[in-house]
View 1 (cartoon, rainbow, N blue to C red):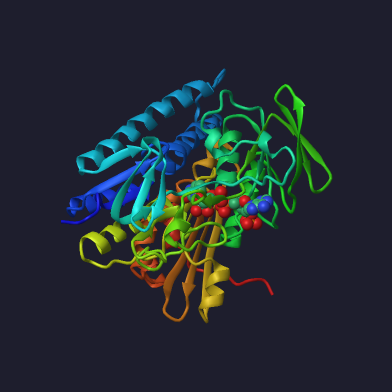
View 2 (view 1 turned 120 degrees about the vertical axis):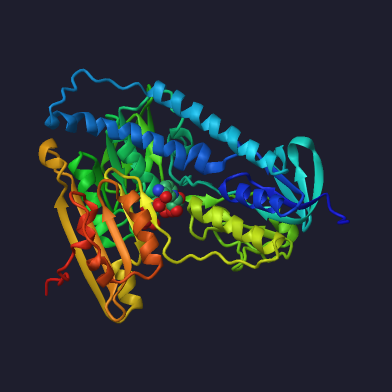
Length: 457
Ligand code: NDP
């Protein structure tokens, strides 16, 4: 009989924590889980899931316009933000209930409480003012939006946390940042009818993506009337009263707006968690440093998901959680495989990518071939929309393996999920070419890319 209250105590009931806890339970572990906010975590409660509902809502804004070209009349359309938020919240409540049920059915005890680490095997439950002990502790506390508090008036802005619960739809939104959240929300608000301006510090948005992706997304944002200001940051946010703000920029201009949206990154949530009490080493940004099996510098403490700042995506956290449970509770040491993880940015149009960007491939492989195309999709011939599709394959010329695929365009995320299977399995360009096209689709262009791209001299 173990001397601990639990075999596993998980702090944080998000995607990674829930997966690990459920699986460990099914392997016979006695599991406790503490969650200070809502079971489901960022993805379900205030991230991927509600965001996708807002994306769907926003896409209708464009669809009503586009439908005209197909003979529909869409006059006097109107949009009600409160209805959207209420329906979205109902669905999130339902999912939250499912997550709670699944954990309970697996046999885990759930504590609605903030939990902190007292020592290698002890957790303090604040809401109950008591401690519990566990043989292993799993830190799965995720991350939280970061706001630049050196900017005067920074508190006048909102983050994605608040954006899901705004009382009213703003008229004008100024977004700080040029990454996933900044651009997804810029498109959401634009589609819902707001004026939107994105202020980004670097040369071009989506810095970590293939250059063709950032260029294409930038031009699509501009096409739909989103203003993108690069190489610029906020200097100050001034309260003009009546809900109006003035954002002073580093380029000595200003923008008046009724909503400022911070999307300048997310930081791992380890502040005040007491990890130092167990000698857990943290990175400069607060991330828990872990080995390939998600073990921290303390033998009994593990961490999965965004709190480790490896690849901050829900399916990755889920897999890290599963690998942890296999390793620690099923006697099957399992490492997460980080190669060829498909990624999507739900801009409008969306981005779907898997594998190497061209610049990354050129660093790692001796000979790289590029195939790419840029076209207006058939659907838009009647809508009048100038939206375009960009597709790009990155090929290791020595093995003929497709090592990267990058798509910006309608259904890019759906396409890339399927392509990722083939790319991960080591598909060659010749096999792409051997695959018969499915006509008429956007995706067929991927198997008809015959001309190598030759960069201009
Ligand atoms: P990102 O890293 O994508 O973007 C952060 C942005 O903020 C970057 O453009 C960055 O610029 C900028 N920035 C950082 N620091 C400053 C600063 N001091 N001043 C001005 N700008 C700054 O983070 P997000 O918060 O958008 O998303 C967090 C993570 O969550 C993502 O990396 C992704 O892993 C995940 N996510 C995934 C989604 C999806 O799968 N669709 C959706 C949303 C989030 P620079 O590029 O120059 O560093």
